[in-house]
Length: 331
Image (cartoon, rainbow, N blue to C red; front, side):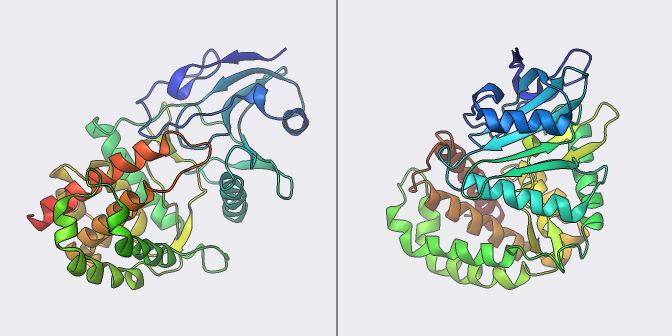
């Protein structure tokens, strides 16, 4: 019989230090016992022993399980599994993550992929190295400094890694965000600030110039938030959840991590301290905030199967991004 635990943001077995901050993104997940028997049996085959304890995690938006498991022989691993009936898009994100992690191999900066379960058109599961720890707290200056330094290390480690990897690009993503501009009338007035609508023509023109700046052969993690980071007891950080990884420019991850503070004036200081973002330029940084903020506002009009908290997350993130842009533009 599997013993279940739900110990909050970073629950784990006895003796494992798992303190940390609450995740900013938290979906509604199934637990490890709810995934199909065939998938659980595969997990136990990979680990070489029956799962004796399962500790559910709450960060991230996937509706599938995200579970720290301990086997009868004491082996630990992290399991994430999802099927298309929970959400039709998430299985492909898991496949993408597996592709990227297989390409990268082992590194202390990310959790190693141990094995992949993939049913064509069906369930996908990943067994990953379990990283003891919790999420960093962005209000803690030491944690914030560690996040910035680790992202710089990650950017160096991923330089040129996507040159031979056939994946989507950051440039394509930025271009796709332009689809929001013709549909602004569909966005509720309480989601999109009036100043964006008033200056939409100018802002859209600037947005369309941004896609070229996002091009490059770096592999970018592209989804750096506190809930996609694990803080080890020694203060080092591990980047998890690579389902949104892209081929792009070296400035992408340094900017993404700084979005944790985007609505605060300190964001501008953090941008100024980054050589990659200084080279990109303040105008392009601000344009990125507007482009992503408008896209997320637009996406609040799109229903999401199995992701009941996504709408609020998009509203919150859009508001933060557009507040940062408003401050920088002096609107």
